[in-house]
Length: 77
Image 1 (cartoon, rainbow, N blue to C red):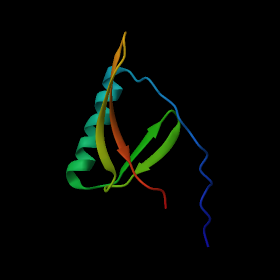
Image 2: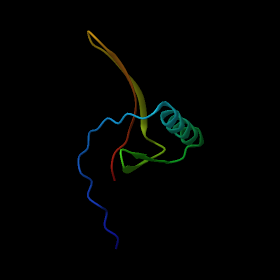
Image 3: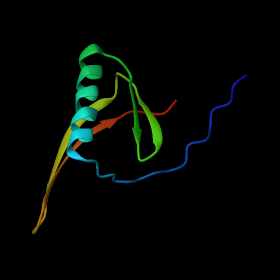
Image 4: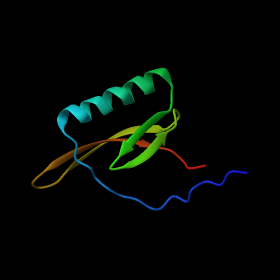
């Protein structure tokens, strides 16, 4: 019987060059369109996003900056 590796808590932000970010967005869009799992590496860790992940867009505005986040959320097995 295989055991799953314990997942540690993680909360990071990783900056990517524009070309790399665009490539990741294209892969995400392709997987969403096909209803497939997205396998992506973020800051050295591989992440597998299921096709039924909840997708939302968040917009935050402060006094000196604004932020848009494209989020995918799912429950862990």
